[in-house]
Amino acid sequence: MLRQLEQHWHSLRMDGTIPARGDVDPAAIGSALPWTFVLQRVAPGVARVRVAGQQLHDILRMDPRGMPISAFFDPDDRSTLAVHLEMAFSDPAIVALPLFAPSKFMRRQVAGQILFMPLVDNQGDVSRVLGALVTNKPLGGLQRHLSIDATKPTRYDPINIIPTPALQPSKKPNAGGRSALKLVVNNG
Image (tube, rainbow, N blue to C red):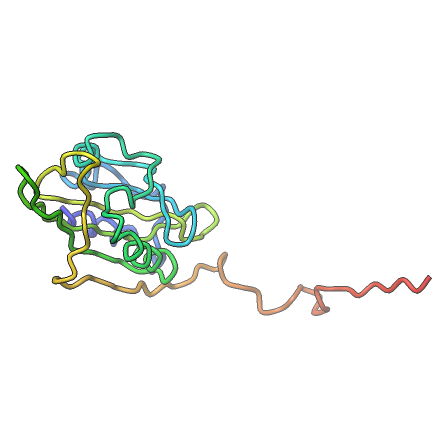
């Protein structure tokens, strides 16, 4: 499922740019759609779930839309999650983390993975992430959270961006070649 979602994301990269949120086609995602989410960055390392597939509802046993993605995670791992999430937005990069929820009374261990892939907004800023959270079974509600599995490797693939002409900074302050600032002095 993660591979299918990532292939769709790569297919949207026209001329080396990062895809926009509006470019994502749910029909092209197929079987990965129930595990898929779109996050919106609200602060460094913090993102809220804006779109969530049915399996994400089932993992938490509630609707995660509007919640921070950290709601899925053990409080001890939320700062580590924030660092990796910020890499997806700022670098930008594809980031994948191995996950688990330890076994507890009457509950077996849960294994999973989360994938973050950057998306741009209408202004060309990386403020969204397309991703998926896949587990081998439901968590069983908010009383149980996922942890980042430090015994397994994480994935970090920086994105080589080819800037679009609209996003390239101007080399001159203005067309006339004069300074963009003007000093006004009032000696009176």
